[in-house]
Every structure is written in structure tokens, then in C-alpha cells.
Length: 169
Image 1: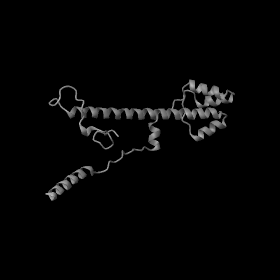
Image 2: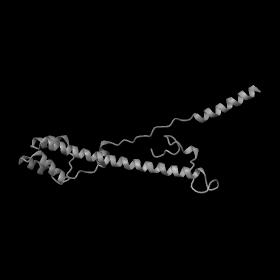
Image 3: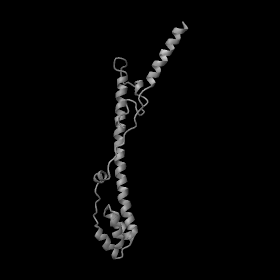
Image 4: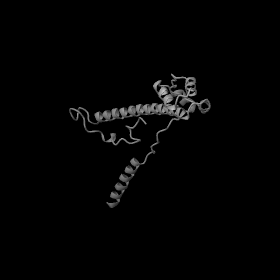
């Protein structure tokens, strides 16, 4: 009798361990883009105030604060290379103005990237919420309970990487 119990216990443990053993969850793959693809995807800066005008105003003795205020008022943005920065500095443009031009463009790029990341994250959250609603509606149909179905199917939760309802990453 104890041998039969022992055999049942071992077979149950084997079945439980088989359920636990499985392929490990792969981390999400990150798709990287090249510098050329990144440059092509970034919106081109708009320079309502041309660089020549900035050089002219700087040579006329207008201060850095006034130049920065004019650049900001015109909503001009510049994507300057290191060579262009050196040339503008050699032509008399104050370094504070050059720093502002670089910082404004960098800030715009980061803002655009943050907006894109937020948009992707929001789409992911919407997809997860849709899958949760689908899961809850599949848990108990009209045969079992009338009205809304507040009890989720046990396989729907918790939402962790690798679960069947974690598809947007």
C-alpha cells in the first residue's frame, strides 16, 4: 500500500515539476537604428533667422542676451556641426549664443523622443487594457453569470513578461 502511495506521490510531483519546467522567457529585443536613419527621422530644424544675420548682429556689437532673445522670438532652431560652431565663433558670435543654439536643438530632439516614447507606451498600455478586458469577458460567459463579469480568469494575472497577455513589448 505504501508503495502505491509513494508511486502516486512521485507521479504527482513529476507532473507538477513538468508544469514548472519550460523554456525561459526571452527579453524583449531592442531594434537599433543607425546614425543615418536617426538623422533622417529627426525633423529638420527651422531657421527663421539665418546664421549670416546672427554673425552680422554679433559684429555690430549686439550682446549675447539680445541675440538669444531674438533667436528665441523667431523660434529658430539650428543643427550645427562642430565645424560650423568653430566658424561662427571665429566670426565673432558669442559662446553663450552658440551654447543656446546647441542646447535648444538638443532640447527639441529630447522632447520629440520623449513624445514618441510616451505615444508608444500609451499604445502598449491600451493594448494591455484591451487584453485584460478580453480576458475578463472570456472568464465567465453569460451561461454562468448575468451582467458584467468582474472575476478574471486565473491565467490572465499577474501581467508579467512572458505571460500570454503581455504582447506589446
